Amino acid sequence: MFDNLSDRLNATFKKLKGRGTLSEKAIDEGLKQVRMALLEADVNYRVAKKVISDIHRRALGQEVMESLTPGQQVIKIVYDEFSTMMGSAHEGLNLGNRVPETVMLVGLQGAGKTTTAGKLALYLKKQGKRPFLVPVDLHRPAAIDQLKKLGKQLGIPVFDSTQEMKLGDICRAAEKMAGQEGFDTLLVDTAGRLHVDDGLMAELVELKKMLNPVETLLVADAMTGQDAVNIAGAFDKAVDLTGVILTKMDGDARGGAALSIKAVTGKPLKFIGVGEKSTGLEPFHPERMASRILG
Ligand code: GDP
Image (cartoon, rainbow, N blue to C red; front, side, top):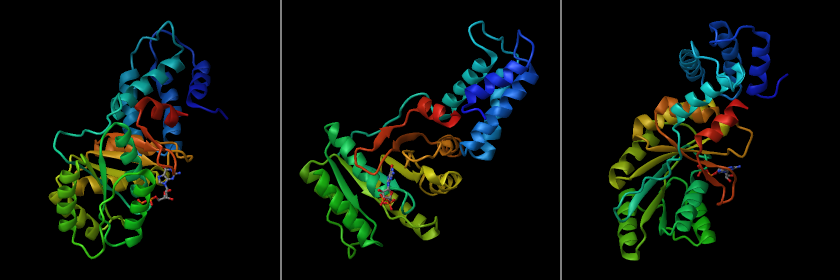
């Protein structure tokens, strides 16, 4: 078997005769390999189909470049298509000028929200910002404690939420305290559930109204592959995401979820989680993800 798409494509094209333009037969043969690579990388079936038809359209009739083999040329077209789909540069956080600005983190339980809240706090602190962590998962006291502990480790203040408080009171008090203490970014760690459900979404919609966040970021687990895509669709519909953070990319997930989430929600991937430690956060680079997906 061939290890990566590049080897597969070169082998495919070696068998095919004909120079000049990329013939339809050559493209179809090449795209079979591309489709296989996409599905192996856990790219959503519908998304893979669309990618293939777009690439087909781009490739048809293209002159074979002197400097590239037909295999390399198809790879180039595939990469160009991926860049168009995933965005060509790192987006980062779009923080505005209000003080404080609010970033709301949403996602299912276990996706890595609390861990990511700590990572983002550290990331902002390194940029000279003054983040303030706000736990609002009032259903699980353990989640509140987890964030308080993390904040202590990182030297980042955490609002002293308790289960007895009301969501609205926490939001107002945290904003007020941020104003008094000079914290410029509230990082709100919301409740998660094991599955998407109406109760969770209703709570998040209410929170979003109260907080008016500048960023509403979905934290999704890359290891869940196709599920992550459906989850992203459901969250986006309910709370209108501004971006996605894909966690656990240090595992063996090939990253097909990244391409599919962008295609399904239209929302940018902003960061990837690459470890359990608070330093395990990296900006999302579309071209690196493209290589990872294509193998
Ligand atoms: P939450 O329920 O969404 O708040 O999830 P947690 O933040 O508690 O994370 C759930 C588990 O995933 C914990 O064991 C984390 O250490 C782990 N985790 C979170 N992000 C990453 C990551 O990027 N890589 C790895 N390997 N583990 C992660």
